[in-house]
Image (cartoon, rainbow, N blue to C red; front, side, top):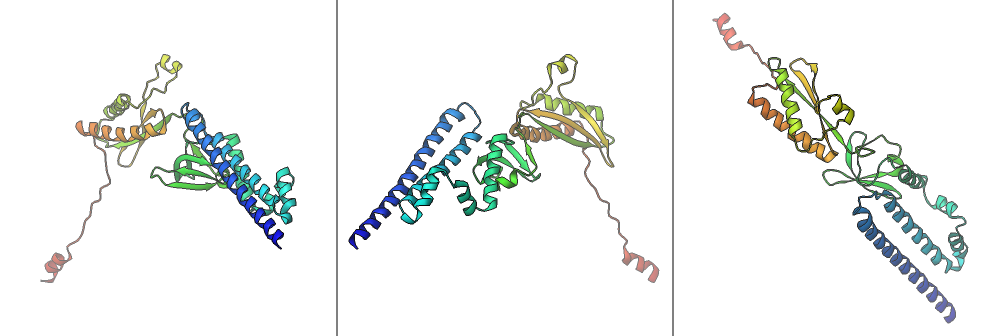
Length: 290
């Protein structure tokens, strides 16, 4: 009796020690990985996607090894523990314990890291609605931080089959299209010239022309009439910035400066107006009834 209690106590103690050691190893590993990413990768502006994903996978493997080592201490589960440690039956065990959706998320996460449709710190838009910066890619999900500092959690299997707009894939430059309508009585040529001048003078605007364009005399900024609307002449100017962040500021500043310049030279920007007419029934009754 005493020997059995002692054996069980020793087994439980050994399992607890293994669990504690496993957790400590994961914490130390994550600390070294985070330090490596911060000092080496962030400092030199390298892609973090693969390293962070490897960190998640390595942590999961360490936990799996710790679980296997703990199971080996239990006689009834010793076979399972040895199978995990040896690597035999790992896939069948995961398939039995995990749902099909979880496996799909893991495989989709691996494919995302391999083919890189987006990376950590990329600005992406999903379904034309959700826009934000990719903050993390792990075994189950992608975490996106939107511009209100909310976190959008998207399963890997969902985002890997969705339509994604990536503002940073291959080229960080951003083109902002600014459309403004002016009145038919306004000077169109002057309005176009003002729009081009405001774009050229903005400090965040970049010259997007190639050397061949410069040699052929292509203008740095192009502004054109795009349509003759019901109540306005629609004008458009294209403004380039080095990235999406500068592009947003550039767009806001230009709308303000162009509006101010238009006001200075009496260029009208039409707005919807409604004329309301009504009949005075009281006066009509008085005229015909008395």
